[in-house]
Amino acid sequence: MSKQLGLNIKYLRKVRNLTQDQLADKIGVNRAMIGSYEEGRAVPKLPALQILSHYFNVSIDSLVNFDLSTESNSAGDAQNIDSAGKNLRILTTLVDRDDKELITLVPVKASAGYAKGYSDPDFVETLPKFSLPFTELSKERTYRAFQISGNSMEPIPSGAYIICEYLQNWSDVKSGKTYIVVTKDDGVVYKRLYNNDNDTLLLKSDNPEYNPYTIPLNSISEIWKALGYISFALPEPDEMHLGKLAAMVYKMQTELDELKKK
Image 1 (cartoon, rainbow, N blue to C red):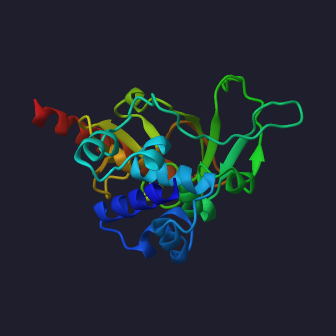
Image 2: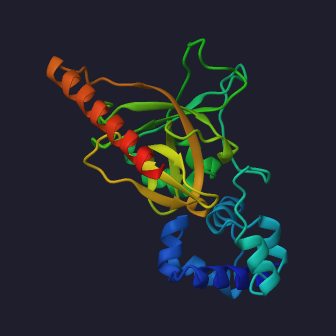
């Protein structure tokens, strides 16, 4: 197993034009471990194997048992984007003493670590946990809170906590709604999403000073639907006015863009 697994890790790393140092940084291990994996001297532990599987968008079974350098496997398994979530997506959740699922909080300082360790139970257990007694939150769904930083989504202030619901099927993304997107390269971002095509999503900020951009679906690890937010920065009257003005400008720009498409 370790020989084929090592060859596949090396092959996929080179397809992405990554050095061993770069891959090690992305999955949260040291460079020497990547060398050990590729040479078959060590086998990744389950959390690292899960992260490798998600990062390269390849099932663990294919990563371990098939030669991905062959044309049939590399074109079929490695390039396929499971946007509907038909394959298992690892999601670590925690419960209280009454077996009720808790909301995990991802503060700004943990965002970079979360982008690498989102599927690592040991990492997720280190994050703060809490519950909310709101009737709007269903007991049947999984929620997470992400703290955002910066002014790209004003009037929501920097430092606010976005309460989100886990989205298993990325095809359920509704254009114009806000989501937390966890990406392999950009970390945790909070943006307004638009369905661009089958392989990419368009991300827009509510602050018109920021340009929209696209990301490929195969760079995404998780998508969380934003439901609301908690903030300890109370707005001043002028700030509320500017926020509404910015929203109006953004709406006008969006409508103009739609007209141009037609």
